Figure 1 (cartoon, one colour):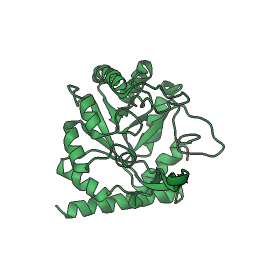
Figure 2 (cartoon, helix red, strand yellow):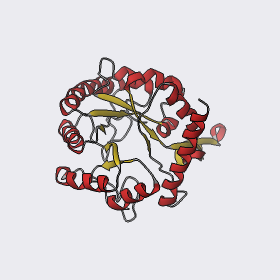
Figure 3 (cartoon, one colour):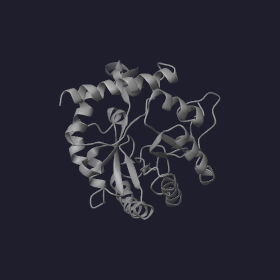
Figure 4 (tube, one colour):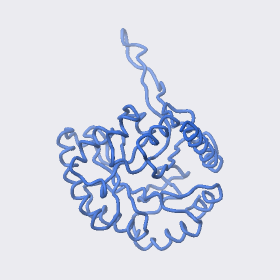
Amino acid sequence: MDPRQAARALAEQGWDGVEWRITDQREAPEPGFWAGNRSTWPFTGLEERLDEIERVTRDAGLAFSGLGGYQRCDDHDGVERMLAATARLGAERVRVTMLPLGTAASGEGEPSGRSYPDLFDETREHVRWLADRAAAHGVLALIELHPRTVVSSASAAVRLLEDVDPAHVGVIHDSGNLVSEGGEDTLAGFQMLGSHLAHVHLKNARWRVVGEEGEGALAGTKRWAPGPVPLREGQCDLLDLVRSLRRVGYDGWLTVEDFSTDEPLAARTAGNLAYLRAVLAAADAEG
């Protein structure tokens, strides 16, 4: 679906808002989540598209849950543009990505090989700059708990955001990401984040055996990897997650990022909405 088709479909199904993905992506012969995604707005020339983004969103009767930015915290020029675009659209909040681990590839580049303490200290300086710029634009910058970055867990986010005003920089809790890396007790994680808990992404995942390796005494050693699954099938208990959100008083957005492909897209989004409504109703019934 292109953005207009996607916005119309989501509105007809009963969703409240949309969180547009904004990035320059690779072309692909078939549309995918990260390449050839037809609902992605390009970062190049973004300012010339803001009127269209606003029109497509508002004409469908949808709100902005935020903007799914991909500009990294050390790209100050790019981050500044995303903050300004967020303010112009009235989208209120925008994701800014963090530095990858020294063992993790970044885009088309090779792993940096840098140590975690070094990367963490640099990221902390970028986040302080980010807080000042977000305040200047009157928007909230969001840091996502994400595997293979310096901020994969609530604990790491708490360390990173020491002395940073939660009015300017908040945290995206992401259930599916935490299946891969950074998993902590759900309620404890929310309690640790406190007022920095600003946004919630919902997806699900589970670990699978993806092969075997080894010879001799090591033969049969299993290799495991996480992968996306439908919301109700993964290792994250979404009912427990919503219960925990209720306990800490969270009343913000729940934004779905379902990277499973078991069902056709329209059936998947409609089914996710029905499932989440059932989860919320079950949590509410418990008081």
